[in-house]
Length: 86
Image: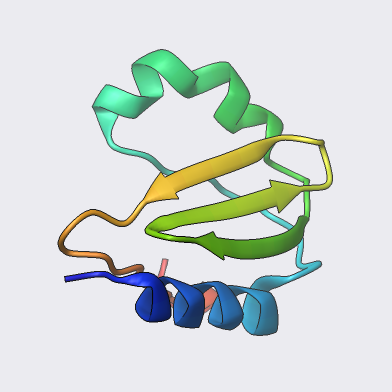
């Protein structure tokens, strides 16, 4: 179960590996795309300013001013893929 320390570890990893990197592609499940499509498209070309953990919430702040809140729920994991695996 994802708890505060695990969410904090993910935020630290995001800050270390992805902070200030250019976002080239954004993918989301179809149920999210229906509601967030235009907002997700705005993130292409943006950069992650910082990732923060607040309880089970992971906050991602982008250079566009957008903030993505992700509740880690029970499974609580993210998958990172190198660019050559897309």
